[in-house]
Length: 437
Image (cartoon, rainbow, N blue to C red; front, side, top):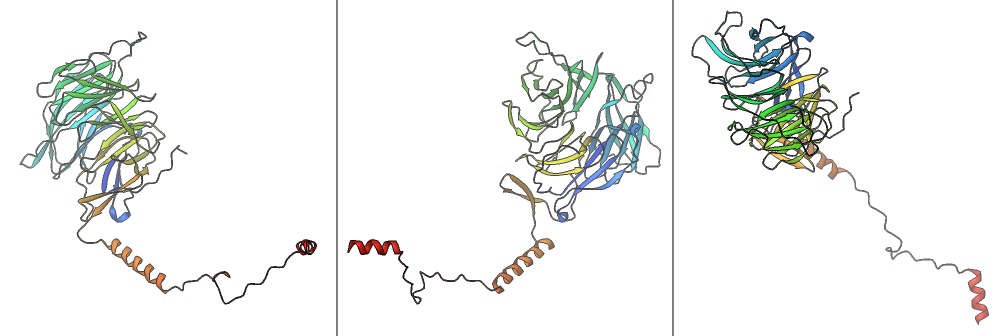
């Protein structure tokens, strides 16, 4: 059995998440208010096949015609509908025809949020990056009917590294810059409009013992969606580094966290907080303005954390990894809201921010119960469950009034009608009194 810690789970607000695993399955997890906020698996897309393992995923959750991009181990990039799971586009990554897909797998994927063309088809732009550093960016025209033919332009390709292996990549919020890094590859920022490198990191100096840490970046992200100049990266040497590309090439700040490699890093909406996940299952939050550890999330994970997603609207954080659990956390109190066991090792998780719970749940009130915080929906009219609960309360009150009340018998001291019997004196005391007389 997996090693877990028993923590009270108050439930989740209405939420929808999509998970991806090593067998190529896409599972849809939903939590609804009518079900008490307990997340459940409602759909499963695909058949189990290890050769179709999902390595990277990206979602464009716009309100009209959302798209989901998935990169598989076989070198195929699929564009799906996140609502129904229907396949729209299947693209074979052919940046380097001399290499096999298993030798040069896709590690970075991003689908750009572009406007839909006003015609019979729509266009989406994809950015991919492989382990050997072969980056490709191109647009594909997706027809409304999935069986119709599609036309694609020749993609723009370039190399982001001359040696080493790329392990992480990220596109900023404005989708103008991208960052790449990996094992033996220093962080480098590229301008996507011109496909040119604008900044390259420099290794930190040796420590006081003269030991040099080799370059090994496992995850990276931009600190803010509106500012591409500050970059946060996690290393295999359990370090969290902050870079400012406008000031210097070496890290501005570096913090050690526990003893396990940093496997996942994601940013918060405030532009100051970073959430990290380690190879031993630790999940924590850092304030990058001061480098202070804000705290760890309550509820130990038993496997390596491979993906962290922050909900764009609700104060909810999702994490998944090799322990096959999808966990939802409250970012304010860092308490576990709920967890779902999904059987396979999970590689990625994304949120669908346009999920509708089929009810008025837009306004949320945060109520604290000790150390546990829950999200409750505030509506103009009471839901049926609330009415039934009120009826139960009234019934309980009536029952309490109708039941006879047992009264305690009055004590002997308080009852004046009964006379107290005199206490018998012992014979020894009577003998003493007689001698004294």
